[in-house]
Image (cartoon, rainbow, N blue to C red; front, side, top):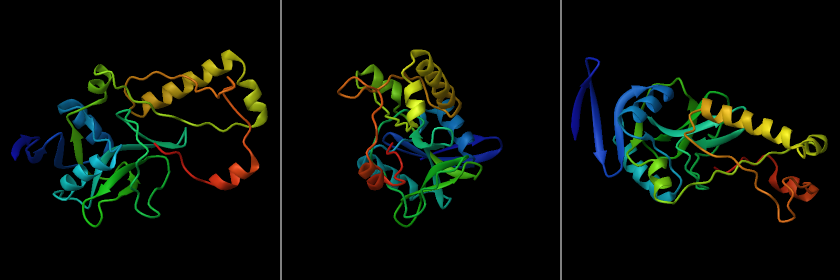
Length: 215
């Protein structure tokens, strides 16, 4: 356990393995800046194993919730880890995955240590990670994040124009950079027939309903 003086206030840092619980109350944006300045990033939770580590850290927090590096993009309509981590694992508390502008993800410090969506202006403890996306890329284990777009038939026809696709790419890049995503490369994921988009079947629409993207 290490106690550090900062801004005339005691900041308690609990260090274990790769994760650091910072018992200082900050907004999500402030927590993100702190982690990137002093460590690597706000923690990502792409697997159940990492969730178990996070749960143990969160239990020592002085606030009811603890910030994660999870953010909702109200422009692109999906949740993503700001570190660029890929993971289909999710642990949302029932009814608490609120996809709204200005909302970010937290983990409960008590109860079942599940995830909750809260406004990024809340002042909470947070967990930093000492291992980041750059380390994974350097080791040859780069991560991928898949983003699905649904278009009207007319818009899909327009997407066949390379200039239109480039414009869409540029807009997505700007939005991701504005919302804290580190360096990344974008490319279209083509279907087996070579097409980028395909027509969604009626039974597929009924099955998915309002299901959100898994990030």
